[in-house]
Image (cartoon, rainbow, N blue to C red; front, side):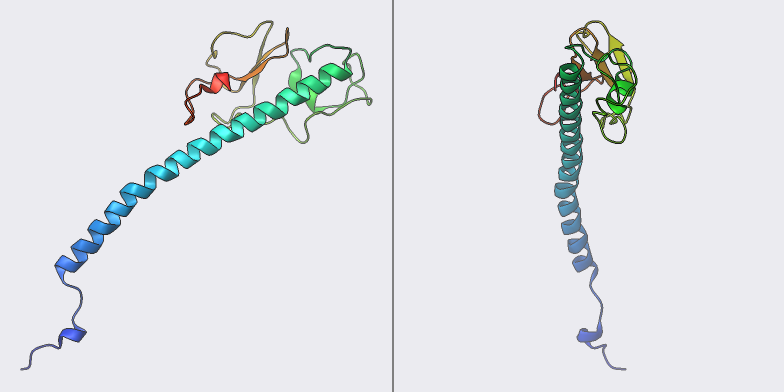
Length: 152
């Protein structure tokens, strides 16, 4: 019997272990970066949605005799209204399609209050002050930028 030819032999156990260790190190470096990127994109989407809704509220105020939308903010911003805020065809809709979800908790509900609470109520979604038109994310937590979601 002759010895097997080294060129036809497979990888040794040591070579396979080295490859597995290198892949493990690469995974340990890359996976946390994906998690951070996902959190950063949710925070950016939240900031974008807030800016869009706040602009819609301001435009509504300008076109409706200097009054903010009432507790029915979703309906007021997504349908057409007259100058007094009733259903009509003169102004709006201020948001195309549907009212945006909060990308942090995927909720679209809007809690309304006469004045803005000092902290999130824990209900999720959004919170809106009918008194001064202030609009915020109604979720707890801090984004990757270090800013509380409620304070964006």
